[in-house]
Image (cartoon, rainbow, N blue to C red; front, side):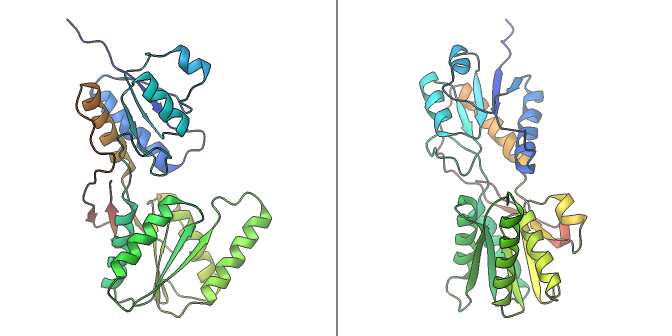
Length: 278
């Protein structure tokens, strides 16, 4: 007897095509093609009448799990894998980037190049940034080196916020003693900082060595100067999430939601890439 085709919901909003969203979705779909899954995008999984009326429609879910989605999948008893590090749910199985490891990698990269002053640029109220900074600081623990941290708002929405962001970066850069190595939470954030450094007459990488995170080719390779970046390999995250979901649908015991994978470092853009998974 032929097994019924699995039906999978992908709870990722692709309306804003962030690289980490599209790449995770791409990894999920790659696994789905290999295993003949039928996938549908359901970006807002939760207790809406439309979803509740289709209870039992899906055999499994891979999603950026909101609180409403977590409540729904528990009631519906649908195997689910979370792919959102900042999710309010910490109980469901998940495959997410190890941002703490990214911070440690950035510190190791800069230490190997002889830097003794460090900085970190992150987003306000952002869990990824908190973990990255913690990783960077943990790698510097036991040394006499310190790290100057600065945060900015995510995705400035108007010109006033944008100009205030620029002014805050100028003020922060003016507080530095160079040479300095700086890790930025995302590629676009690092590009903002690189532009300010160049405008202020600092040389990259002589006065300031910058490390970004995300490895977006558009931002890292096609603008000056090219940026060194840490890659989390989000396609791999999506693929592993699908593989984990396959095991759960087959009746496997749920793993710890905080299980980790050791990061890998390989040569890449501007000499440094890392695939860090958690």
